[in-house]
Length: 195
Length: 92
Image 1 (cartoon, each protein chain N blue to C red):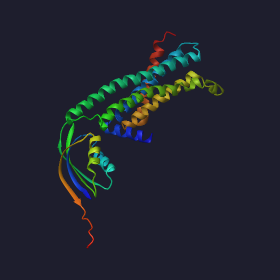
Image 2 (cartoon, rainbow over the protein chains, first blue to last red):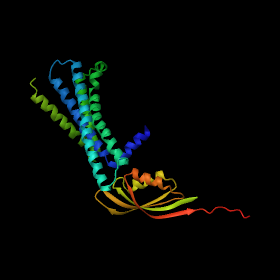
Image 3 (cartoon, helix red, strand yellow):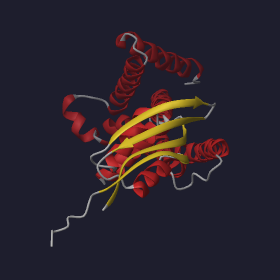
Image 4 (cartoon, rainbow over the protein chains, first blue to last red):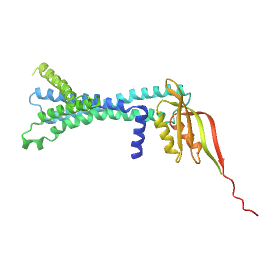
């Protein structure tokens, strides 16, 4: 297991693919968080929606986001890595199938696809935690939908902070910027919802 | 016993791994060696390097395997130092 992780780390460094994986994580993670936020606000403005319905709908969307992330990234990354390998083989006038570059072309699309799928799924599941933990929240007078909404905002803020760290900008400003997107989304849903 | 103590190789390699990672990877697989890499030509996707490896007993097949696994290919063996220790002969 340790050698597999070391091999993966080496291949990521070799092909500079860690940057791609990081970008996918942030982009699709943000996608997942904002989608959950939209769903929660949508349920909030629709009165009298039962909690199991909210949980099932959100879970279904989270799984679909995960599957979509895995499949779309895998298809595009396999094509990209194969093209890169072919171009390198042409320049080297050699078959690189058994080299580190060949292994990277086979393994990295799987890894990047997993990152792209797991990011929205994991972030969505964290946002849904207050809905599952409703019986535990009751003694604290916390409402499940509102708590999940707050968790979604927190996740979106944290993704912004992470982006700020990557781009070496002030973390609070970066976090507030992503929160602004969340606020705009929420406002739009409230504005157009017929209820 | 015949031992290779120095070898100078002309190698074509992709830009990645870079010179540092390339030589470090070879050194990890060839214990007790000293490696010097000089870039002699640079292309869009590849570079030609002169790789000098010194050691007490360089196993060429091992060096060749590592270079191939890193995507490189040996163009030529430009210089070699080989030693054969004298056999101890007892006076009659």
